[in-house]
Image (cartoon, rainbow, N blue to C red; front, side, top):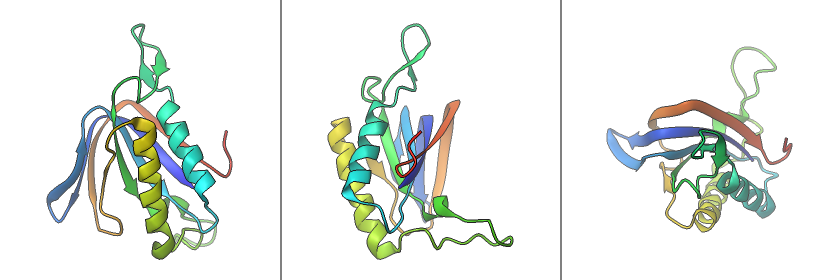
Length: 150
């Protein structure tokens, strides 16, 4: 499981010109899965995101989590996070989980995030052509992979 996390002042996702998910201050979490991802990956990642200290404290130091900052989360499934550009110029997504596996993983991940956050997690529409609008705060952008935690 791989995520790209962006600390945002606001973010929204549209499908067909309609807003399907929107947040104020918080995290935009682009999420990709492989066929080898398990419930343990989902639990680990949701806990990591809830505790990730990338929000400023009173001294301006990144020392608070999204929970402590009372931020929101917008999670968007994105299989392209597993693009391989090793061979040629056209990316291969063969490492990305097939939709029939990725969708239930994404739904379970969102459930775990909601439990860790203590409130609703907003989402895009799985498999839809989406447009993301965001104001990256900082900017702060971090990639995390459950199979190679750093």
